[in-house]
Image (cartoon, rainbow over the protein chains, first blue to last red):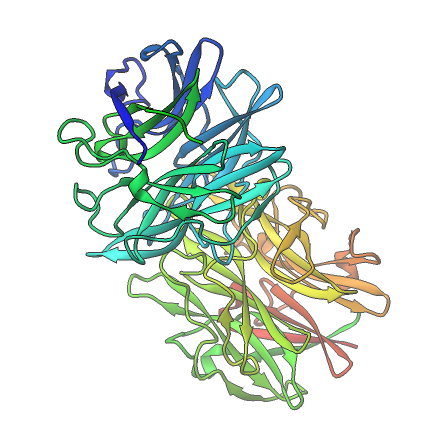
Length: 320
Length: 317
């Protein structure tokens, strides 16, 4: 089992002033290590609209590289505009994953639209930054990864990676909507696609991680870290219904692969669980693992899937 | 082209329709069998809330299209599952015989909040000669992509020299044409190819047929047939707003030709088939389908009110 030392919450969106669009939630953290700072991209929400619905935006917070508890800067504006009427990202851009590509940065993000019979649908978009990751421009008005016969809806949670010249996208795809006391809830599983240019993607067409909680398990945040021996995936998972509570809510799982094809799930090794009390006592979710100056860290969400921000943990040892 | 109008050949009010459907027989698409021609079309069920769901049915005609032999006893496929692209209707269904199989490309409709609908193209297969179809999967084979942001639909597929060609439409966007109007959509005809009919390469927002009405022209329902050495495409087009009740802005039939399947020359006049002075196709003509049977060339199409009152046929003289 990996041993993580919890360093506590490093960012609470409720502490940020002067940004009406950054009122609640800081979800799905993903890092970009810059010179003197670690930029953490996350997604947030303005207060709910008159219809009770939220719009998701994405932003960043810069943490001091020498002291990750110290905040240096917060984005003045959302990094991505919302889409035009009737397009896939009209009602949200969440979450975002960023990777360098020469002089520019490439981002994949999930775009949100609203549906009549289910609350939403999502597909994955592509954007570029030419100002060092402060803002991004969309590669096009539509999604770069859309629906297909065996991935009919809810393509989300992109994690963009590049190894040995090949782009990899780990993401989730909806399997079916189930009705929980009349309320539609999506079941989704972890998928994988590869690309030579980041634009044209080949889906591998299968679930990477076997379900542990039965057919209705939902899996999210497939965060893959490349070690010396192979690939470590930290993910989160929950029950399909009645999951907005301590017992059935999100937990952090783990899987290992030597070849990016075969994945061995072993949640017992994940090593980061809910605390007895405090901001992460009910659930832990949306892990993101990164290396900085010889240490491996994990950012993760606590109660109410990031309503109160994200926290940091440091690994005792290495991820080989 | 010299067409002989045979008039309306199917009036949905005169037949019992499956699936609780009443009225509408839209986007007729045909395949010839030994003793009859089957025409699939979309008809509508009215939900308790007053909204429509399109279902696919069919009617069999004798080879002279003088008689309806039978009408589908049940819909050709169930509506899509909760949250799927074809949950709120299938319109149209476009059949294709290939390699001993009977495939069809569907356009699935699902309702949205900010706009009325989104669509995608699905693939289905029949194992009972076209009475019913089974889905290839819950999701579409073609849908919105980087430069085709919405409303991918109306897939029509033919195999030529081992390559699957699909002509279809993609949305260029939604726009309010008046401050108090609901958003209206604009779409154009595109082209994609495939080696297996499942995985498609789009040309990604290349509009293959020139506009006649300018950028606000919406183009729909391309169907393509090789007549002699030349490929002909018949489609329909209209203004993007105020097109439902305004005869001058509603659907008309358009035409283009190609000798290489890459470049298309628009030439509506060459089609030579316009609205009638009065009767069922006097206000609009839409949802055309070019097809061949027993060495003859036919054109099925809808008339007034988007096919509420059925479809007609013209035969190439």
